Image 1 (cartoon, one colour):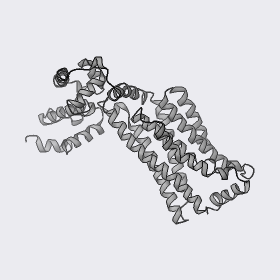
Image 2: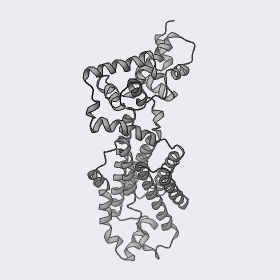
Image 3: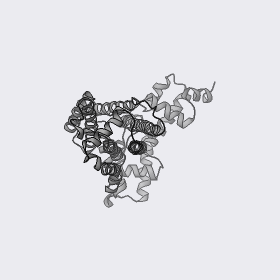
Image 4: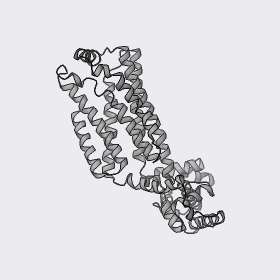
Length: 371
């Protein structure tokens, strides 16, 4: 616990020092809260709490601070302007409810605090109302964990507006953050509910959620430090494109429907004849530059005229080239053909191909290539 808390404070300092943007400040706040919770847990284990009774139950409400903060972080990634004051109030309302409920305890006598510690920490026989309090906490953190997964999916859809290869946008760490957050919080919720009906739930299982969550969060923090463009590059690209798409278009750049059709033909020509899709690092900005339009108008044409986002549109061309090459029997391996078409990941290619055709590349060859 002590090593974890010291590491957390160190990571908080590094994130704030190296990443001076709002997204990372939010993440640093999450790290700080987790580190404080670990430090308080350490102190509660090594100190004589009869001499320091004010430490008892101090870390109980902290999950209702850093889990909502983590959710806000994910919501900010998915939609920059989605977190208003109403949402903030709703997310942190359980924390304030819990603190208000516990004011008599925090202001109460040392005997009350010591009695709570004896029941919950030493004998493992908490009162039913104290068990309900635990269920209340774990229910909301699990709920926020589930919402986090939904926000991650929303973020993935927004990334597809800008990047033709999802691995370029490095969204894997965001998925890890959301899914690990949900798995750990849901497991803790199940344990708290089970505790209402039986006293045979091993107390040590609670350490699994604490250790697992801490390892996941700290691993992602190190990843962000090692990969400085994992978020900032993506967030800036999304902000410049999607904000204009949703907030209001500049009237001096609006094109007539006839002009949009002209640019639509130009986009198709660039992909049909110049094969821009074969560049694995192509972005919406690259295509927009070749077309001669701002990125947000290029995205508008793709969505409204071609009924597709940038990611799906580029992948459609890549998959068509792959299928043509597979049937042509060029002598290249399947992976070589995929890389030539612009894919930069085996996993992404196989998933896209199976989703498009319903079969694997090998099965596609067997079913469609002439004998």
